Length: 247
Image 1 (cartoon, rainbow, N blue to C red):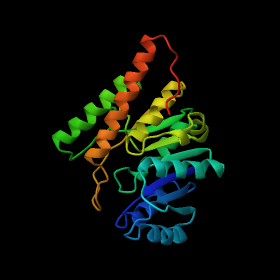
Image 2 (tube, one colour):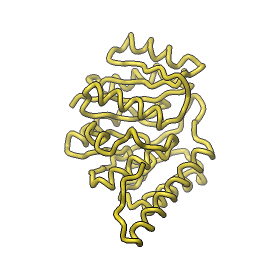
Image 3 (tube, rainbow, N blue to C red):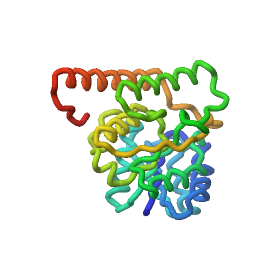
Image 4 (cartoon, rainbow, N blue to C red):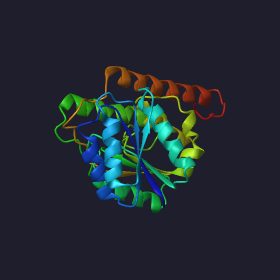
């Protein structure tokens, strides 16, 4: 299957060159698309240099930083229009281990519609996280999965592989969320369409360089959207109305 790895970047100058080399080593036949949101630290230029050295890498220079979801929507569309069969999404800060890429791809080739790198299945881990962060993430994911009836342990994971046909079927380009709720929105749509998601255990490590993009605003957006989707679904069910696709 022709594979494209989509990597959104913003202010990742300390990570991008080494990360792209690690991705190339892990999946030599895959192509890579870096979607850079006009990083002022030169991330886009460093990605171009790595592309020239490593090959099979394209850099999409976006005009502004307008959210993770927007960057992925642009990257996914570029990949689907170019005829890729399988699209992977992952972060550039080494919190997602490039060495796991073959396992995610194998899961798709084995029949799954989506393979999720999961912290919350046997074998998954979040080493060195403080207790409050581990509890917030774990129980936030449980709340999300239960309210939306997702049937997965890690609804907010941003390390995933999809069939291109899966993304088209769920109309990914009509999603609304731009923060980490983007991952949940895609999972919710896959559940609504009866698609198959499998979870592959990963060890999620904190970045060594650069600054985390997570914020209270992003967490708040995610929880508000999840609650809204879940409440609306239950009200429609009580009223005997069919559940329309979200978006």
